[in-house]
Length: 112
Image 1 (tube, one colour):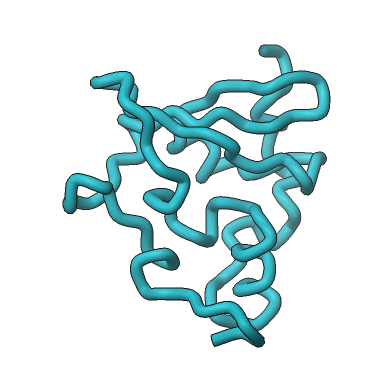
Image 2: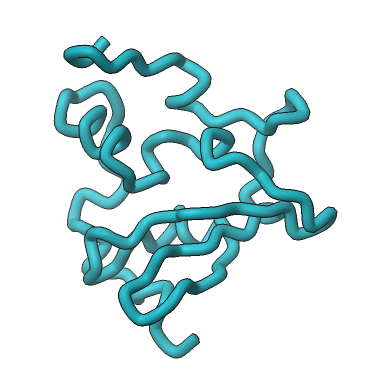
């Protein structure tokens, strides 16, 4: 528990709502970007992170194969880049997936 916030193991790991492991190659995330929302595969988001814009984060997700929405809670907490994930990283509960701030990787919204 962090202050009044409780983080479950499932929210930290990320689980497919159907009960299996989440396939990052089958999930497309919509990133809230200052210049407009951008769709990228979850695998790309995991590899690159927010790039030079630390506030960019997934705001929606869907299955590439079915088109069905995927809840953001299915994405492992460390890759959500929301206030809960940043709080857990600061508290040392999870490792920062982009310790350099993602600034070495290309901006996932660039050139789209």
